[in-house]
Image (cartoon, rainbow, N blue to C red; front, side, top):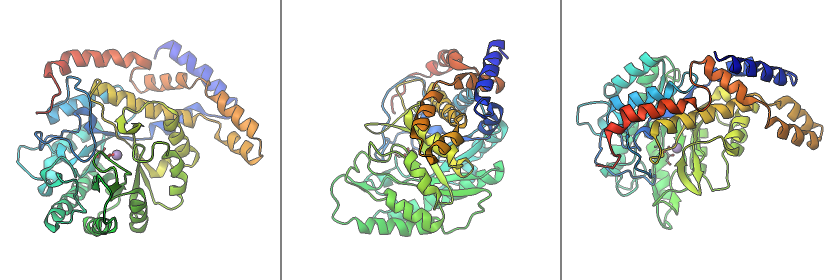
Length: 424
Ligand SMILES: C[C@H](O)[C@H](O)[C@@H](O)C(=O)CO
Ligand SMILES: [Mn+2]
């Protein structure tokens, strides 16, 4: 280890210890947190099953930075490179369209075997896997409706796809010895004011009941449902709204997924965690960065990310919250995007673990808001960076921006020869 990094850490440790904060214990806790890193940042949400399909479902990737992964092998190589620059052992979040198979298979026919190469790779890398049915970018989702579609045949197709997805998720969990979270998100909604808000929601509820009918062992598999307020082309109405899934998730004991980009621009998910924790058995987060809309920018260490981390730490929610990332930026190097977003999320958690939570709580209980504000402000300049650098070096990954040289070399040698990222 670099002696300066070690010395800086020792100094930082003493400063935190003066407030009763044990930096070694904080790092121990941080090392146990697994982030679910989304595969779709690596190729602009294209997947491998239907590469000719336009991205649909009211989400959009902008940018044509060269070097996107074109095959499962390339995507796994890119993920490996990113994980070599991120401290800790994590999970990879797959979407159904990322099946690794030579078979021409439709979404409702997918089976665990179509993902076996992913499982073998995850095992070899010591990673977990999470899963998502892909209810978009498919001809049967062309009119913007899937599980709540008024046509029974179309609805049936999506129900079958989601049922197949749960079985695939369960096989991940079983083979990897850690639960796989399968998250259902459907884009269904109307661009303009609906005549009937109720009927699509009733259809979605009934469809979900069928999707979740098969009992699966929670040791291997957990279900999550993800809500949304609006999307491109569903500005007026989204069937699976927050209230819809709050109700559904609580009534049916599903993890409730909160995506930071899915609410009103000034509404934050950090402020929802404590309430939800009192009623839900578990929470899934899609940590994203909305800029004016659900733009899915790469996550950075901003105020909301810190506030999310604080709520998880102070509310003792880390044990029952699954933290997934959800951003996709095609305008920068995609491996760098993963590294930046994942490291930022870990930094936020570390900062939260290094705050004087007890002292702040006590000041609040005493009505001493002066101390609460003063302490909170002063801790912003405590040397958490020295603790982070030490953690990186101890974990065998570069401290600070040293990782960027590695990504630049990878870009030159591996990604740039792949060429442009234009959709075929
Ligand atoms: C690709 C993901 O499933 C998607 O981003 C979803 O989670 C979402 O957030 C849609 O806005
Ligand atoms: Mn999401």
